[in-house]
Length: 339
Ligand code: NAD
Ligand code: UFG
Image (cartoon, rainbow, N blue to C red; front, side):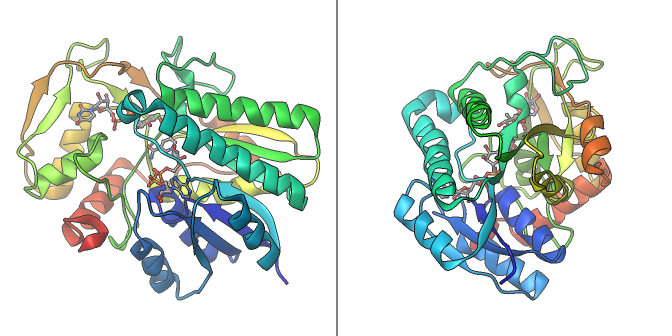
């Protein structure tokens, strides 16, 4: 039987795109999701787009019996762990739910992996672990600091993995720090389906473009950036997903613990993003300047060279493609996967 990869949170935004890329690269996989923040439809679409079948388990990554069942039914040799909560503001309102889901989830998974002798993991970390950058671009050795419970779950998750590796260096652990994933599959059939009012800029903008919301809210135009609005390293979700396929080379025996930024290295401001999406949509999108959003930083962008050198991966898709695909997804699915 061919090796199988377990993808937790496989029905989510990044998970579903990564499942598709894994299948296209010829891997066998099994997906697990409790659909707390996704729909079964996303993986049905992946099956249609790839014309490939794979098992999907509905359940919680904190359910160790279920994890054991999956390991007993499939020859899982590595795990890509996406399952978790990710909304910064919500994490300040529900810290216990975030610690429980993101950290108990990781611990349950690691315990079962250890029992089963499966020691290859890719962990979804975040550029949020860099906190307020002291210099830019951010290399992987930049100082770490976090300011909210979500970020803390990611930093603690990274530290759990560092401690595990120190105790047992036969683990191969890849910590991927994502910058700002946006966009959608080029077919426009798979994309980000935020529930309620989107927290993130691009889903909010596409909802304005489709008439679901009145105008884009620009959170602050008095930052120390070229046009005063926040600068981020936006990366196409397809590039990000391919970064996971590339990172699996660090599951080779003896690879140990590795950390990579997944970003483009290029920062764009909120106003530049509005212009880019306006071009994709074909008309100027309305926006208004609002006060700064608490907790936001001025600028954040990656030094992506380590992933290029060691994984042979770099982002290929430009801002025009990110916006075109995000808009195509929004047009085809104004209400997300419920359409
Ligand atoms: P998402 O919410 O779309 O996907 C997460 C998936 O995990 C969802 O399908 C959800 O239903 C599932 N899930 C949550 N808790 C679960 C549990 N206990 N058991 C089983 N399934 C569970 O989010 P995403 O954008 O795809 O993010 C994936 C990962 O990447 C998360 O860990 C997130 O923190 C991290 N990340 C995301 C971003 C981003 O901007 N999207 C940035 C940095 C890091
Ligand atoms: N912004 C607006 N209006 C909005 C939403 C955002 O002006 O409606 C601005 C923000 O102020 C910021 C930029 O657009 O300058 C990007 O904001 P996002 O909310 O899209 O993304 P963040 O950089 O704040 O955070 C994202 C994820 C975090 C993750 C971080 C780094 O939401 O979970 O990227 O990876 F930690």
